[in-house]
Amino acid sequence: MAEIEKTFVVEKICPVCEKEFRVVKTRSRLMVTKRDDDGCTHYEDFNPYYYTVWVCEHCGFAADEATFTNKMPDKHLTILRAVLLTKNIKIPFAEERTLENAATAFRLAIKFQELIRGKASKRAKYAHQMAWIYREAGDKTQEDECLTKAAEFYEDALMRESFPIGELTDNAVMYLIAAIYNRLGNRKKATSYLSKLISDQGVREREPRVHDKARDLWGDMRAASRRR
Ligand SMILES: [Zn+2]
Image (cartoon, rainbow, N blue to C red):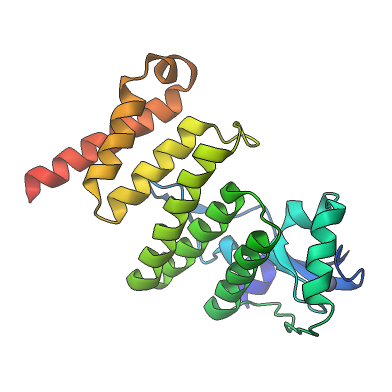
C-alpha cells in the first residue's frame, strides 16, 4: 500500500459539531515529477490533492486545513450548524481516498463556502484542485467543467477581494486565469489577461516570476497557433 505510507492519520476537533474526527495528512517527502502551467504539481505515485479537503466524518463539514484550524467567525458557525447538525449527514472516513471520495470532498467544500458566502478565492482554489484530480485521472470533460468554475471564481475574487491573499497576488491570479482559459481553448480571454500582465512594467519589476510565466505561456500559445 504505497498510498498509505505517504500519509498518516491524525485526530482533530471539528469546529461545527465539536466532535473528534480523523484526518489524513500527507508526508512532506514527495518527489515532484512535473509542473503544469496552471500550477498543478505532479508527484511520483501519489496525488496529495486527494487530501486537501478535510471532511468531518460526524457532521459532514468539509473545508481546507486553514478553515478547520483557524477560529471560525460565529456567524459562519451559526449558519453551518443550522444546516449540518439538523441533517445527520455521515461521510464515512476513508484513509485511502478514491477519485470519487476526493471529488465529493471538493464539492462539499465549495457548497459550504457558498453557504457562508465565503471568499471566491477559496472556492476557486477548491474548483481548480478538483480539476487537477480529474486531469490526472484523464477525465477531460469533468476537468474542463471544474476549470470553468475555477476561472469564474478567480475572476470574481479579482473584483471583490483585496490582495494579496496569503502569498497570492492579484497578478498571480490573473496569470492563473489566463492559463486556465488557454487550457479551455478560450484564446481571446487568455490573451487579454496575458497582455495586461506582460505590458505592466510594475509586474516585471516587482513580480518577475509572474512576468516570466506570463511570457512563457504567451510564447507557448503563439507556437501552438503556428502549428495549427
Ligand atoms: Zn463535524
